Image (cartoon, rainbow, N blue to C red):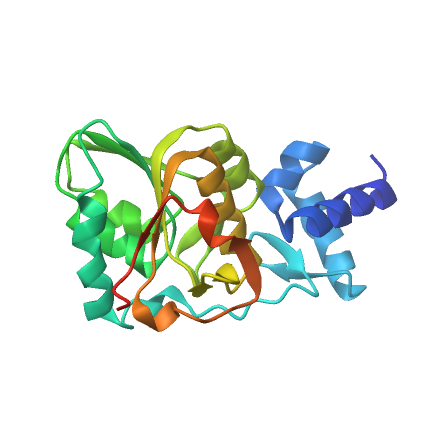
Length: 233
């Protein structure tokens, strides 16, 4: 494939998914890593995309999300008050999807060591579950974001879309009855939307600080969530 055709293919993927990885492009285009890196460099210089470690992202893509490290220390007491309610829904043999939120991380830490399967794109969740010998952990690979300590991209979404879950557990940036459930960036939005679509039941953890707020992208309407766990009074 000629350079112009490769560039068009790369830009189409960027438009559709918001980011591309060098690994994905090598497989798609059947060329060397050096060729892909040269293509991405040229497109970056031309202002068509932004090169990042391991790939590239859409130039106009907004990401107003707070890093995992900052979120992990926010509203801990409120989040922990919800975790026990979530754990009550989990039983032996469950297949559970966890997003990359700090709330899900607390669930992973508190999850009892029972026979179940956890599927996640979060490196922190994987680490929290590593010593629980009865829990089977399936990691969703893909493009790694140091900011969110999680994996994203086409590989992540494709793998997740082909699975079947009993429950998915997600959090959000904002929620209310009228406007629905919101997140701050398209990376987490895509994973959470896919989790909801492949789960028999979806569980939303939303502490009182998230109510009556909106953010950048809408994940779904509130009625699309099966179980809402909150401490709002």
